[in-house]
Amino acid sequence: MTRSSRTETPYLVEPPHYQVILDGTDWESLGTVRGTGESLPAALVRLLDPDPVVRSAAAEDALGEVTHQNTIYEATVPVALYVAAILDHPAVAAGDFGHHADTPPHRPALVELLEWLSDTAHDADDECVAIGERHYGERFLQEVAEIRRFREVRPAMFSAVQPFLGHESAEVRDAALVAAIPLAEHPLLAEHRGELVGHARRLLAGSTDRYKRDRILDALKAWGHDTRDLENSADVAVRERRARFWAQRDSRGDNWTAEYSEDPPF
Image (tube, rainbow, N blue to C red; front, side, top):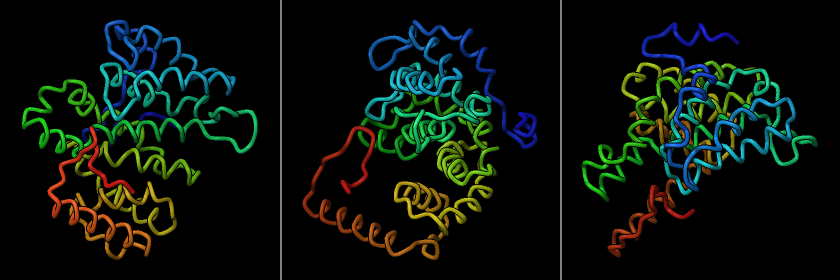
């Protein structure tokens, strides 16, 4: 897979080369879950190790340092850009991850990294910003630099994810789609949402994965699409349970909230 296709459409810029990110980032100055990011360069390098067991441990060491309770840390942005930059590296494209990467069933490294990008982008999406503004005021985004910076580099990450929407593996295509959707909320990527809608319809026609269906249906609704013809019976049941939940909460005047999520507990 070449990188040239990523610059053929407007507003798509490549992420920096992964070595540039490693060498050009002051990791020790960036906050992480447990302190600062001085251990991150070594862990990120090991993501490309030929040994799948080493790659698995590296994923825990590197991604775990910037993944905790839906929080975007100072080091999250360079880690996410690094992950985006290595998606088409041979060690990732052909490799496996997981605690038992040497025994079946294998977990593709590419899928793992795409899913991590998806979860991280979801923690900085428009809905999370709206929740933050409701609870902390309209200056929420201006005051939380980590989220703001992540949102600024979404076009670069989208350009790295986009080629995998046409991957030969359905598992990779689906992971790429779910990752691309929150990235495409960037205003400069609005014209690419039509492409994602086509892929979304394909996934909804064949997948029963609750997590993926919820993410995709929510995005389509946010983009103004009528999704009723795309919903199955399980989708309708979930939508109705949510409506009942919020109606009951509003009637009681409840004021509970999770830190970065207002999804009902089901």
